Length: 155
Image 1 (cartoon, rainbow, N blue to C red):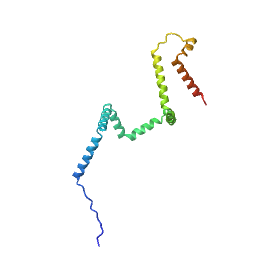
Image 2: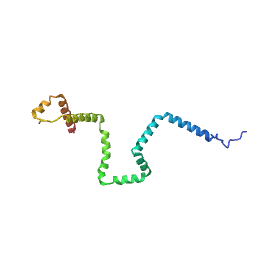
Image 3: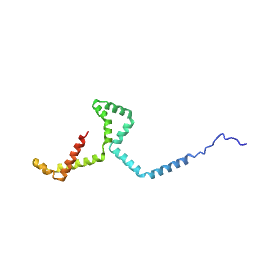
Image 4: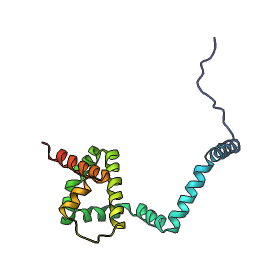
């Protein structure tokens, strides 16, 4: 009858072989991610040149003190209203239709640019306003503002 196995001998890999395997794995990872690594180095260089890297390093070393100072600062009365409204603001941002808002802000920016380039030389009369309504761009803008006011007034 055969003897039962009581000890297991594990195949031991020599340290030199393990180091060589690890180095080969690291070289392959560097080769596969060359662009990302170079971008990361450039980012670190930029952060270091701007002094931000030193600040982040100091912040990470003294994070407990920094969090304490930050919490102490937030407890001041001037920030209480901001903190109370922060959650509502986040939910409001979630409700905003960003595409529609972008269209509106683009149009507002176009109007501001036009207003900056035009010089106002005379007063506008009631008759001038009536004539301006015949201009399709002005008519479209006024119609849009009226629709906005109507939508805003709905209950």
